[in-house]
Length: 192
Image (spheres, rainbow, N blue to C red):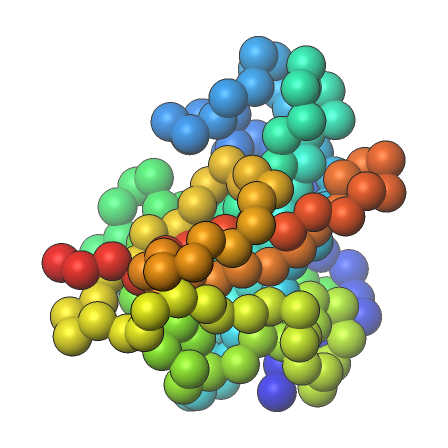
């Protein structure tokens, strides 16, 4: 189970994401600098205990319309070899663990493996903020696993009801800055 460290991180995750998110092709904001607030998410465990895995939802309160982004992140104690340049979100100093390389989880093989395991029912989601606590609000729905799965992460979240007969997908929630709760698809298992 994930252990959450109560310590300092500099720059903070939100500071790193504020610089990184507007450079992404899926960013739909109008400002060069969004105003991001944490809106939800969950964690997964790395079976080897080396990579911190977090799926963070951030809402842009400066956007003209409500918008929430999903950013899966892998926190590593060393640079990820052979990662494309756009994979690195940034580095930060963790008060307990030292320098951490923060990667976009879609480019981190440990993050994608654990997300696939979650979609197959072989891993469980954990609370984003509490150590050793499962997150029962994260659910997997759909028609079942496929033989050679791929995973598509939804970057711009939309509140939506689960669809009957849809492929296997991960549903979770977030909270808009006004306190309204929403749920929608975070990831979908696809056939290669």
